[in-house]
Image (cartoon, rainbow, N blue to C red; front, side, top):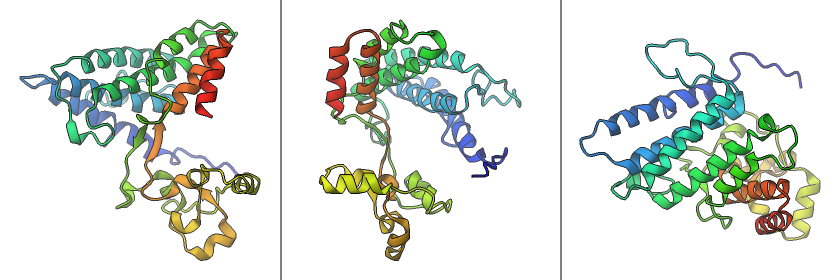
Length: 283
């Protein structure tokens, strides 16, 4: 409640976007793939979608960030690019990726792809959902009046080709729980970062879902012992965020989100019946 944020508060998240496992490693993978005598367009396309995922998330969080000059050894102090410029660059990158993923000559990463196993159809749907998300994040910058904003047409075009609402192709961060680096990040928030008593389920929602035997309860909430705390902590901790289990795969880009983006876009373009249909599908 003192809001003591400093330049040292977020270096880990920043480093993860650019460093090991982030943009620098993805560019290295692209470099090696493009140097092959026999190219693999599916693999190259998947890597570009990964880049769009990571960079768009960083731009969502921080706004203007380094991108056009990022992770270049010859540019030690890369400039900050405008957030909208980054979004437009990523839309172009995703179009390139979709073209490569559609190339039937590609082999792909196979089992090295822990999310989709190199499934071209899944990566195609994900890329379209990601494009819809990026377009949606530009609506207010492009339109003073949301109703009838033409950007929503782009959202509809992409989201209708995106992830299915049944969740079968949800993009989940895969974790094993085997070590600190492979544990669910809510679990890390509670235990490794030491914020275990900072975030809990409110009694009203907990009691309401229990009274209705709501089947989603175990997804929403977990007992402290499931999140790395002793059972004796229960009295003081109450219920915690359900995905705090160390080995819970974290939902990142989902069919629910895709359907709700469609609902918003349909509603703001006057297609209320279609909007209601997508909202009902999520419910």
